[in-house]
Image 1 (cartoon, rainbow, N blue to C red):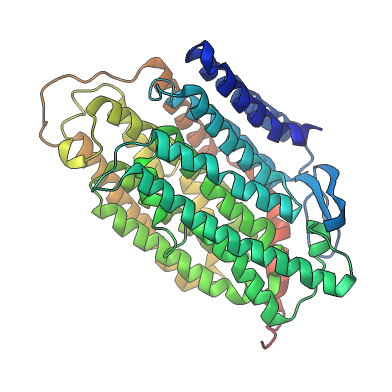
Image 2 (cartoon, helix red, strand yellow; image 1 turned 30 degrees about the vertical axis):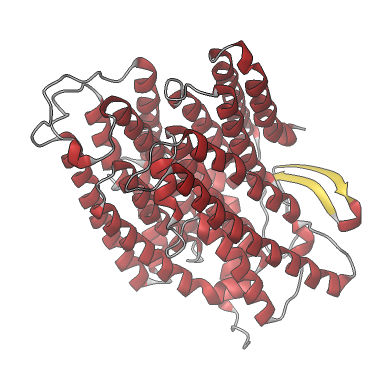
Length: 509
């Protein structure tokens, strides 16, 4: 029963926050913090006690470290089917950790409708945990769409004032339309897959294990795979589907940005590994070169656009486009080393991007601007914050000793054999990364001071958050073995699906 509780705890906690708002603003915050702490604790407990040598692999029924199944809509073959493997448990632990941080970083920032704010925050995280656990495709789609609505409210009601004439309502609506439209494309692809399976077997089912056995004509498989890929590409985000991301980040409250960069982008990578590749291995193998070149383009394009930004939050948002490009290359490389690098990169990017957005939020609270042209000379006027920012900027550019370096190094080493030119061009992204990261630090913290006043430093609550993330990032960089061991069996399965398809001659469509 622990798997359904992982999803129910955030939902129940969110409802309690909302209903107990009438007793003051402090109570919802503490309930939210306890709820997320409990989710994080359960995630770590599952990680510590689970047997993650069990994971789905081709040619056999999927085996899981933990599983829960309950009939739901029997006539349509829909069940509440939740399952856990190494990849899921890592993502759920990351969700719990960033959930705790998103509650802490909004402690003073959010002052109106505090209970309703935490309801939306908890429900986003509950939906994300559902995405990481669902292995019934209808249930997966249900959670995939459900986490969009509270995110819309989070940006629309508590977002910052717009930049360049763009309002928070504009950003929220753009986010919702992009993700909702792509979700509907995935729904059509899911229904197409279910009906193809029904034609073959006469059984109507949304169950992952049954749908893995579906045999398809090459053309059908390619079209259905594209339906899944487009939905995940928008959330990833892959250029040219990325334009919602900078607007959503720039206008979202700090907690929204932490969740968006730290967790919501990872649901797309998870979806590709769990569903797109295993369900459509031959079409994915045929599509792999295109996906890898899209990844290269995202790395370079995201880095160049980061360099051009004056709004510090937009800069960090575009850097996420660049970093996630590495993950896309790794997923389609058919290399177990690169796939494990992708998992480390997802964890490291979750930590470093969350920290940078928290620091951007602290800067905004003190300066009331996100425009780097209005900053400068802050290093001498504010204790702690500039130095911590420098560490995370260095981590984002892949400094050895941080998790980002391990992830990017494994991705480049693993991908080189199958796609040398893609890897060489992707490596230039590391050079661009150092340019925009250091330019951000220089513009914001050095140079001539725009004012002489001393700014308040980080409070103990704020400092403990970012220093905790720094310690985890160094730990991941120095000793990534627990993450690699946990994800090994899951990534081996993904590699076998794509590898076996790549070794087969591609069928003519």
